[in-house]
Length: 112
Image (cartoon, rainbow, N blue to C red; front, side, top):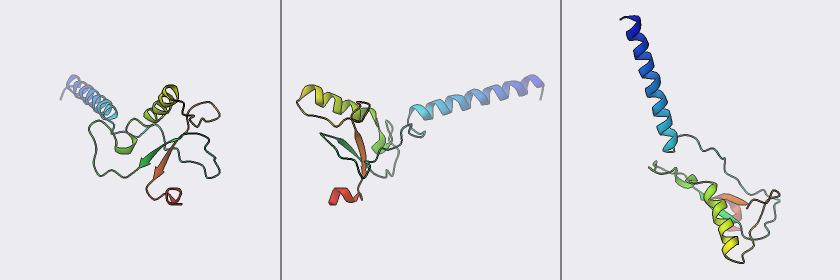
């Protein structure tokens, strides 16, 4: 194999791996950028708080990743719109962003 052929093969392999990793990230096969936010034990919620149920998915979805699809943006957007369109008071963090929590099916707080 000539040097030119080797360089061509290496460039094609690099381009293919770059395209594959970009496609996987776009379709949600990478890691989530945001870890789940669980409610601290000593936190007192004052107002409406959106909670998302975390579950174990047994398959990949074409447009998402199970419970974490659109997390946390959909949660935040829902609470902002709820407070704008109704008189509902939403729970805010110290920075002024809506608090949103992730709960598991086995969370004791759900059954207490």
